[in-house]
Image 1 (cartoon, rainbow, N blue to C red):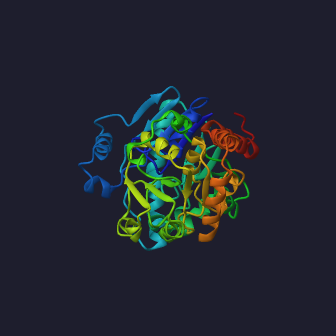
Image 2: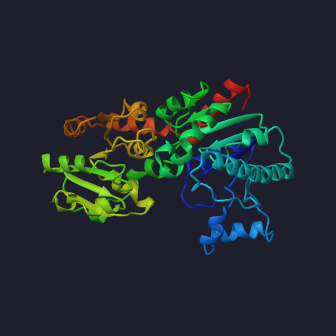
Image 3: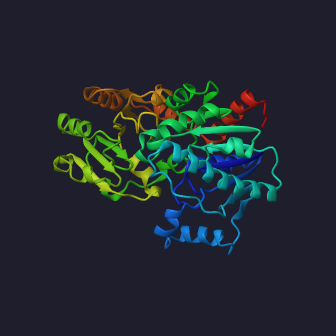
Length: 396
């Protein structure tokens, strides 16, 4: 197959993304064109000193090619035309008119690239791009159009403004939808019956090898039992009251929080509790060793529109190390129910932490690691292929 991927994540952004991993997996068997978003006029002027914007400006000015081969079967396209910045527009009618114009510019860039590469009868894979890719099914005329839902984007102000109407329409007109959480698959199914849960891939090699890592120096002075969290400390996602409740109810526990803090966390009374320890940011290569030093791992997630549908990749990392995990019970967490202690209330967390400490064993550790190791990009993409075949009669 020839696959065209559009989405929110540019290839040259340093952080990883689901879509980039999926593109790499697709390219093992098929030709793939990964399309970066077209540069918008506001970014052209406001971010002109950004090397990434400078590169896109050079492509638009025809000073360099926008089509780059990354490896065998995989190309990246930097669109050679500018689109307008329109999300500030309140009028739905005017926004839709200009968005269609932006889509046509974007589609023309893609069509020129696919013609140059000799792509034919393409599959279009859209990674949560509800605006710039809204009309591409009509404009590219793909053999199959796939909408990939990996976050509930309508909870984010930028996307909510027009996404409340556009995303359901886009889901409905796509040939099929695939999602990385059961919650998001159910959400897509409200608008399109051809919606499938395809799981989540994770790069877990460094976590599977955590047992070989030396204990971090700053952890050596922290008493057991250690109850730990690794990741960004964001008040919109994590329940600070829950953490405070655990620390006060069980002063013999050491609560270790590894990661950068937002302003709310930095100003919180958690810093005044003697058994709550903040390590600050740590390099990703050091995280397995921190997780390995914990007795129980936590995911004290708040339940809100931003978090409720997310697939918790953090849980896979914890389990890959083999650690017992206590987490907030959500629809998305249902796939982990056999290997994770799931609670709803503050008191649930206290009881489950005690249970996790009491029940831990070598057999449970190995079962967790085995379960986490099944969450590969190869398996997730195999589920996408199966959904494609079911809906469009396409074989791998």
